[in-house]
Amino acid sequence: GTASRIQGVNFDVLAEEMLRRHALGYPHDSSRQLTSLPNPGEFHWRAEGERHGWDPAAIADLQVAARAGDKNAYWRFAEHINRDTKMKCTLRGLLEFKLGAAGPELPIEEVQPASEIVKRFCTGAMSFGSISAEAHETLAVAMNRLGGKSNTGEGGEDPARFLPLANGDSKRSAIKQVASGRFGVTIEYLTNADELQIKISQGAKPGEGGELPGKKVDQTIARIRYSTPGVGLISPPPHHDIYSIEDLAQLIHDLKNANPSARISVKLVSEVGVGVVASGVSKAHAEHIVIAGDVGGTGASPLTSIKHAGLPWELGIAEAHQTLVLNDLRSRVVLQTDGGLKTGRDVVIAALLGAEEFGFATAPLITLGCIMMRKCHLNTCPVGVATQDPELRKKFKGKPEHVVNYLFMVAEDARQIMAQLGFRSIDEMVGRVDALDTRKAIQHWKADGLDLTAMLTPAR
Image (cartoon, rainbow, N blue to C red; front, side, top):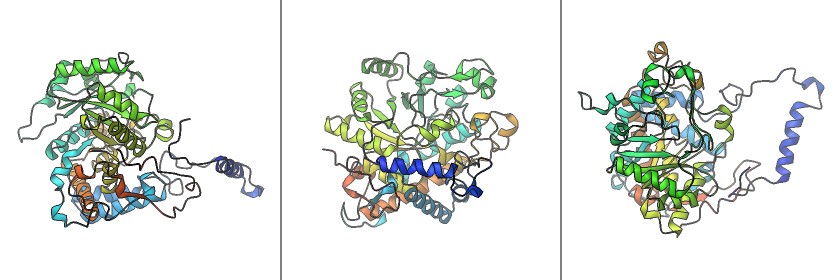
């Protein structure tokens, strides 16, 4: 278990849940007794099963919006996602904007342009191995066109990608990750980075290391990771050279010496006490901190962890921002969050809670063709996104333009909300929790006990 900072359910609610489960298994009417266990659709979408944030309607609208540049399709997607967010009782779904908190509504022309907002976007850390070379390189090209950053994940990067293409594009990932397995980490890898990210943990599976099945480790991946083809790769949960803040400071020092011009980032997860950890990381001279939420997990997370581990980014980013401000450390670092960001509303709420940069992972993959089959770990992705099978990779149809279109639409979505709230730039919004309020009359029987006061406390 973990401590709750927002109160929540009591013993009466827990008892009611137990009784409901018992009634499903042992109904009073014997004719309703189940003879076989139905598939509830917990991991894979089913028409009559559990609702998913990424359902076929959302995926279809997003892919139409990204591929055709169709803004109407994006607004359908955003409306669908924002409505779902509120219905499913995510923490940001329990919040609403307080219009006028920052001043009168502004003309949209006075708000920071989308071309500047997208520079604060980056893609999540998805390794070459968990996803195909085509998907990995397409994400890098797209983010380089935007002026944002793509992340290598922990699988290294082919040195051939460090050189620009003839048309001016670049497949080089700006963020090079250094994770516990150190796969593919060489001095050449470190020097070809704008940012070096030390991954302490991953939001979808905190406390677990990454795992790449042997069937996905082909000759190319083995060469880049300095491993053996066909042999599965498991990253240890901790870094075996980091057992204290002093150890972390030593690694940061070493990375700075390897690449003095790179920004040093540390990736943490949303957890109770992450604010204190973030303060220690700041004192270890990190310049950038990522707070990862519980949503996500591409090809190296067990299904059980994806569903049952981690905490929402809303809690982590709020705690980290408040604690850093309290300790007069906030100006030392840039805060980023990721974990299920999809729309401009998500971006604005993240900024109001304290984030300055924003990570997207699943959504960009969907623009490139992902249809959420949840087969990443089996090497059988039917659209060539999360597989190393040469035949399946031929089915990949994604283009950098698809990711660019989507992220520009997210930025324009955020601009409209910023104009309504009276903010001219992202910087003005950071930490302005006074522009957020809790939704009234939340229609959920388990929501009555929630108290979001700690999350919405202004940092001083």
